[in-house]
Image (cartoon, rainbow, N blue to C red; front, side, top):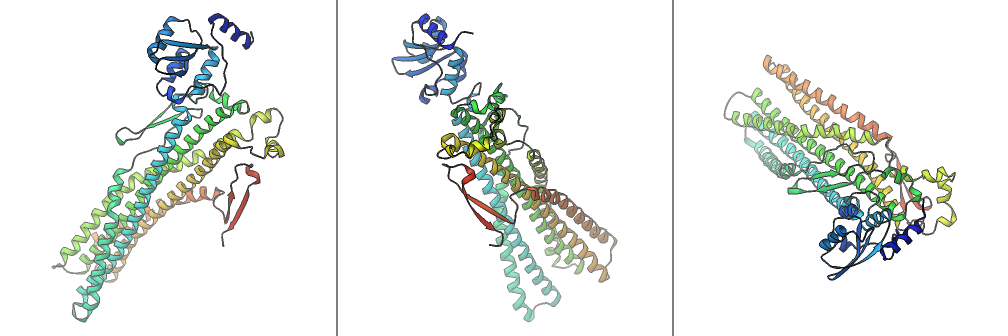
Length: 507
C-alpha cells in the first residue's frame, strides 16, 4: 500500500493545487455549514473552507470533474473557485469534523443539535415538575375539603338530632367553617383538573443498544421523537477509546448525556402520571366521604326536607368517585411502565463502565487506575474533555437518582391505593356495624356494605402489590442510607482526591 505522503504529492502534482490531510484545526465555519447540506457534502466529496460573495476556497478530491464544478458553483453562487485536494477518507473526516460529527454520524448527532435537544428535554422536565407540584397542591386542597366535610357533617347531624336552641352557637360556626374549607379546597383542586389535560405524553420505547442519535421536534405542541439508524462502526470506534481525539470523545459523551436526559424525561413523565393518579385517588377518597355521609344520613333519618341534602351528597360523591378512578387508570399503566423501565436499567452498562476502566489500557497491560492517580496526571488532567466526561458521569448518577425517585413515586402511589382502600372499607364496615347494632337491618344495604368492604380490601392488596416491589428496589440503592456525603468538586484534580463532607442521619 502506498504511503499517504506519496498519495498527497501525486494529487497535488495531478491537479496543480496544494494538498491537505486531515487536521482537527482545519474546519469550515459554522456560518458556512449552516447554509449547506452536510450529507450532500459527504456524498459529493467537497467542503468550502472560505466563501464570500465573489469567490470560495474548496477542498475536493476531483477538482477537474465538470459535473462537480457545476454543482459547487450552483450551490455557492460564485464562479471564482480555488481548490485544495485531499484523499476521500481525509475529506470525509474534514467534513464531519467541521460539522462536529464522528465517522458516519448523522447531522443531528453533532454536539450543538444534541445540546438543543437536551435543552428542550430540560424544559419538558421542568414542566413535568411544575405539574407534579400542582397535583400535590390539589391533593392538599382535597384534604382540606374532606376536613370541611367533617365539620359540615357534625353540624348537620347535631342540628337534625338535637334541633336548634343554644347548640346553634356551636352548629352555625362549625357549618360555616366547614363550607368555607370545602370551597377553599375545591379552589385549590380545580387548577389541577385543567393541568391534567396539558400533560405531554412521553412513553418509554425500545432504544437500540448500539449508537443512534436522538432528534426531537415539537410540531403543533405534540412531541415527535426520531432516532437515527444505528451508525455502522460506531461501537468499534468507541471501543478504541484511547485512540480517539479529545473532540471525538466529547461527541460520544454528548450523545451519552442526551440519551440520559431522555431517560430522565421519560421517568419524569411517568412520575407526573402517577402523581395524577394519586390526585385522582384523593378525589375518589373525597367522593367516598361525601357518598358515605349521604348514605348514612339516608339510612339514619326518615324522608323529609333534609333528604335533598342527603341525596345531593350521594350524587356528588358518586360523580367524584367516577372522575377519580378515570384519573387512576392512566396512572396505573404508568406505574407498571415505570417499574419495567427501572428494572431494565438495573444491570445495564453505563457511560462510566464503557470508559473507565479503559478496555484499551487493560488490553496493553496497563492498570488505568494507577495511571489516573499518577502524580503527573493530577494537575489539570481533566481539561475540556475531562469536564465533558465528568458531566456525563454526573448525569449518569442523576439518572440513578431519577430511577430511585420513580420507584419511590410508585411506592407512594401504592400507598395511595391503600389509603383509598381503607377509606372504602371503613365506610362499608362502619355502616354495616352501626346499622346492625342499631337494629336497622336490610338485605340490600348489607350486600352494599359488604361490596364496599371487599372493594376496599382489593385496593389495599393492590397497593401492597405496588408498594413492596418498589421498597425492595429502593433498598438496593446506595443512595438510601443512614448517612450521606457531598463532594467538594475541583475539576482540576481527579475525583479520587476531592474533599468530601459527611452528614449523619441524626444531624
